[in-house]
Amino acid sequence: MATHIHIEQITERVDRLLVRYEELQRTNALLVQQVELLTHERDSLKSRLGAARARVDALLERLPEMTVPASPKDRA
Image 1 (cartoon, rainbow, N blue to C red):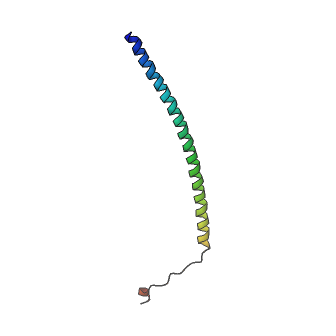
Image 2: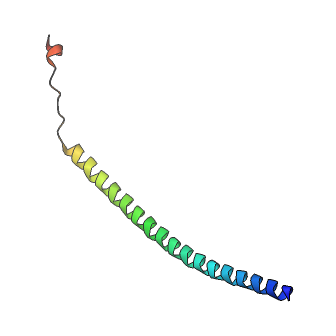
Image 3: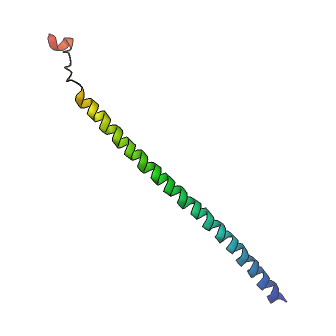
């Protein structure tokens, strides 16, 4: 009789482990999906940043050279 109770306890534990395993698989699939979305968003933002930097660099090159006025100390 004790062996039967012991087998039932083991069976219940195995069933709980299987349920937990399935939960973890679903959670992992959701996390993988989130990582893929965030990776895509990061790559898109990096691309946009590179394009913005190129535009700023192009604008900076179009600016005329500015001469810095001499400070009063330099004039003396």
